[in-house]
Image 1: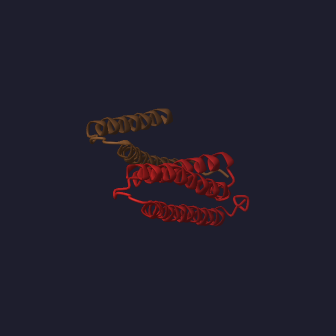
Image 2 (image 1 turned 90 degrees about the vertical axis):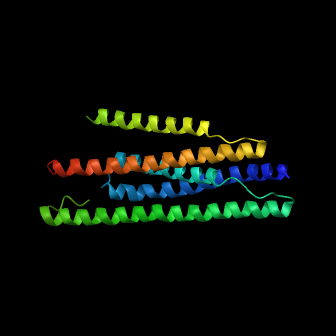
Image 3 (image 1 turned 30 degrees about the horizontal axis):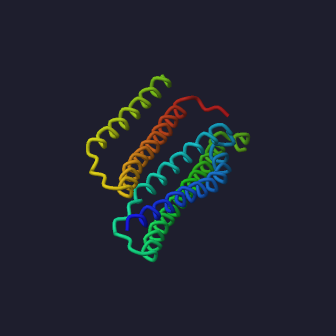
Length: 132
Length: 78
């Protein structure tokens, strides 16, 4: 039945978009702390980089969500609709989780590299004012 | 110099994506109903947005490496 597929799409699209917005908001609200640490407390560049990462995250995830939207098999009853819908939403959630952990890995790595650089600069210059 | 590079990047971005969209139009398959319309629009838009995302990350990497080069050549200031 074609109406069930349209119904599944109308449930899937807002759900996926809301999920992406929620995850991106909570990730990039907290990542600004790491950004400030990475860029030595330079507020402007930290904010700019955070926004750029945010846009990339949105583009990547919304693009993938739209890309996998098509439900290929025919839906004949409510049970099949729920199953197909939960398969799609669940798969997308797992993908979103992987992307979240990947971004977190990037932030932690950036923090580690920045710390190492600060230590090297400290040793090289014998100047305690470098470290903030 | 910075403005020129920025403009060239922007132009390449526009050309690439508009070209892609126009090519997609010419290969559009038959649309039979509302559900296949939603599906095919979503598929095409999703692919385009993913390409945008990849270009965006690529540009961020480019800016990062360029800025690293410039910082390494300029005298260190504390």
